[in-house]
Amino acid sequence: MFLILGMIMELSLALILFGPIVAPVVYAAGLEPLQLGVMLLVNVAVRLATPPVGNALFPIASVVTVDMSKPIKELLPFLAIKFAVMSLIGVLAFITLFVPQMFGMN
Picture 1: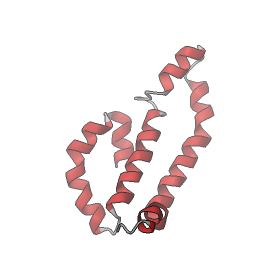
Picture 2: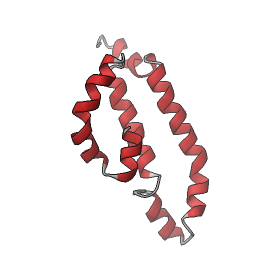
Picture 3: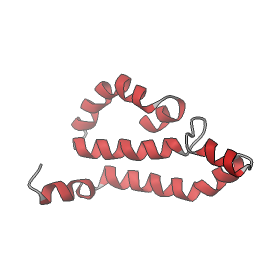
Picture 4: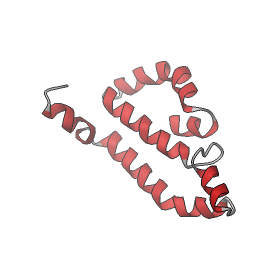
């Protein structure tokens, strides 16, 4: 949900508006709060590289003076990796919880 919202509106605004609605549903589904936070950070990285917002995409295209389609085509493999990482974080909780559990945090 935040992936789509992040593409059309500022992510901080989306978190403020929809966070209180989504968080209880996500926690009831079995995700940890840390998992949700890491997934939201990956969403921010995806939002920075996708139009229409593309805060990192537009400056790159203007500095290099190329058409917008060229950087978008070059970013597609990296976006696929980010989607895969986000899916793994959602499915495999130990990826995000390993280090905190080493320090005795739950």
